[in-house]
Amino acid sequence: MTDAYGSATIHGGIQIGRTLVAVVMGSDSDLDCLRPAIETLDNFGVAREVRVLSAHRRPHEMLDYGARAADRGLQIIIAGAGGAAHLPGMLASATRLPVIGVPVPLRRLDGLDSLLSIVQMPRGVPVATVAIAGAENAALLACRMLALSDPVLATALDEHREALRSASTLADDGLQTQFPPPLDEPLP
Ligand code: RP5
Image (cartoon, protein in one colour):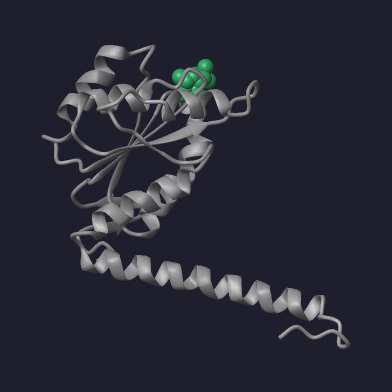
């Protein structure tokens, strides 16, 4: 089955096709937070791989993964981590690929620690950081990057934006019906 991305095929939930995006996380305890990124990429038919790569527990493997990512054909890395969240930044130091960081909220500091750890990168080593637990947006941002050179994906993203617009219009209509303006003081 050819899907929105054109090159990926889905057989029984397994994507066959050139893997373009990596979704990596510091621990499998981050998976629930990162799952929307995986699902969004799947919905747009973008082939992905999913890995646990700890910056602190397996630093050498993590850096090796980053160093080889571009040569393996990956185009974008989405990296989520919590707490002292060094994974996205360290991957960005090891690859020229765009890295999108997802701050994972942990129990103690609600993700502010993760956000600041990921977003405050030194000059020269960028990480595009989304909101705390913003995994879906990370995947959409990755899709937007890929769509620069993929018209099928670009069309799918345009349709997605149109669906958001329609849902917002519907919500607006609903609230205007529920809370009609006063009849005696109409605004121009
Ligand atoms: C970080 O430590 C991971 O990204 C995770 O968010 C956090 C806790 O990991 P576990 O102790 O649950 O494995 O490196």
